[in-house]
Length: 217
Image (cartoon, rainbow, N blue to C red):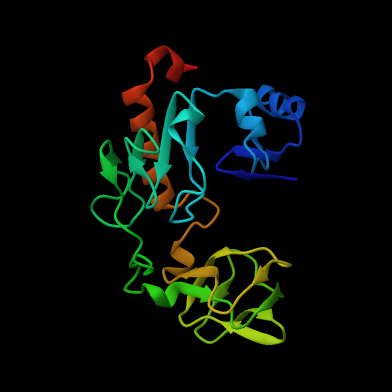
């Protein structure tokens, strides 16, 4: 499948040929590469670990000429060359060349006066079903999904900004989606302010470390 955001299209790829075909069409190839086999064959100039798992799942400085880690779990100079802060606030998007990002607090950043209330969490263990599409306006108490017949309700009114796909296995309390209290004021089809700030930090790190000729390519 494929998906487009702000004119940039990402497409699923299964082979090196499909990766190069996507790039030739100015699309972003998306591959599953748990064993780093594609990474080793492609030998990119830069790797950005944006998994956002709150911990390092195996990324190391030897993965590429430049390795950038997003958020907590990475230490610049140890397992990556630079870290980009991912926590909302004054330092969001800041490039860290020595040390780590702010540790994970488990508490989402405040938007419209709400933090943890924004998060939709699985009410039970099982398969997530009957989810509302991203962009759906909801009121506090509305059912946004179902797990084993148990409704997953939103605590606040707003707009569905994120949601796991149906069919995913979840456990009680697992983050399954989020609601933006700004409602219709949010252009959910666009890159979020947070993602744009982090992307700017990644670009700054690329320009700091790599020759200008490579960045222009």
